[in-house]
Length: 280
Length: 269
Image 1 (cartoon, rainbow over the protein chains, first blue to last red):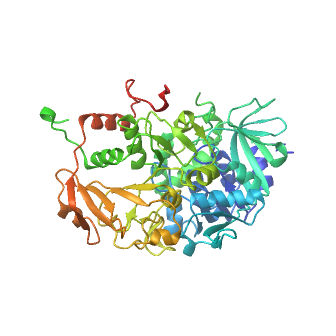
Image 2 (cartoon, helix red, strand yellow):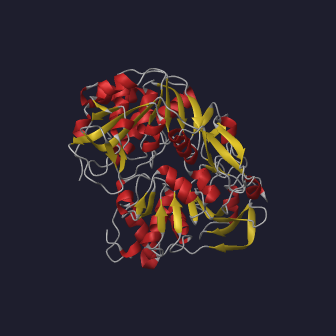
Image 3 (cartoon, rainbow over the protein chains, first blue to last red):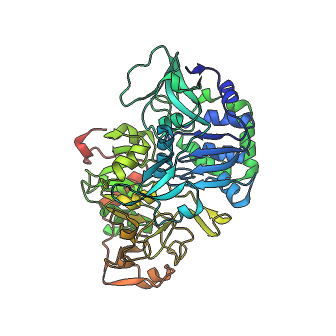
């Protein structure tokens, strides 16, 4: 059964230095507030896993929490580069960042294999690209039925999955809908999990297309209204496109980034509740 | 708009209009963000109202009334025919070859339409420029029935040799795609801010097939790092029409679809 606790307690109980952590959310339901809590708790040497690391991983990398990044596409969607990520890769600031780089299809299938309890997943992909020569976890495999050469990608089994969802009930059953990315697979593939939610309700009303993770599949649930900002939670908040654009400037300069962290993560402006109920 | 019907337009606008024209009504189209998304949405607002837009966020049949900033904007989910998970969009929808055209951008492209979106020299471990990486592009280019690439042309982007092959076009030339087991047809068109290239049907090498009004072949060759082949049937492409330009500018200004514009599926949004 999931325990319903505060975000700070959930992160403190779940996430340790050196852990492999998947904070998932494909452009929607990104657990930004949880990422900020990880920065506040000064976690170090994390292996960060994510199909599409965007701003929250840029912040974790810039804040010095990450040793390694396992990913498919690291950019600011529709805007451009992740400057903290680039500074780490190109200049080793604030520390060197090891990369394990895949395609989105590869990363998605690696989570599927982890959730399924299999050592690898099979897909048609990677062949002819430079990716297999620069990354681990990719190998050619021969189909035992047809003889066709296919690609195997190794399973992802993070220590911790962190996701954001629309709501949970008081027993800790989780419900989310809209663009659902690979969050269900990430939770099922991981040893431990934290789910932040917009609200906790007495009962979960039926919702078309919703994913439900039963309480017993989840470790900790923390109510964090607005916790996806500047990403969004369909039906609760709207994507803050202006912030994604502004991040390009904020993140370009190390000092400006540090000042931003001081104000918005360590400081008085850190309360995500000010973003709650910004839509709908 | 200029005087007495003379249209003035930017090279980027010509590029987006040309890319939009390449879309046929009713196609299923896997759309990358940026120029591809602008072109696909322009096509939907002009000659291809039944174009099925598919974003890798899992939104199938999205009907946005403006160009989304990201592939996960709420408007895509709210207007889609269905929304599926990311494993499902790749495994059930893209991989089996259900999608007609993949619409991609690129940072670097070579003569065989291979794409680099990963690193620009001198080495992978210490690159001069670290780009975002693969995303969905390798599998989109592998599995879609055809691929259209849209990028601005320069000696930097039209590279003699890629620093990293992120996404395979025609590999090392004739027979490469078959040897690699790539099931889709590969690049069918490359559209730039100067004109349009098509692959040679045998070798897969890109051949300049069309240029925009006012652009010379020498200009295009000057902005290519390899010795660019030119089609004997090279033609000049028609400039944007007033209607195309108006729609494109409204689209980029974030103005919603005009009430009279046809909307896919007849759904009012």
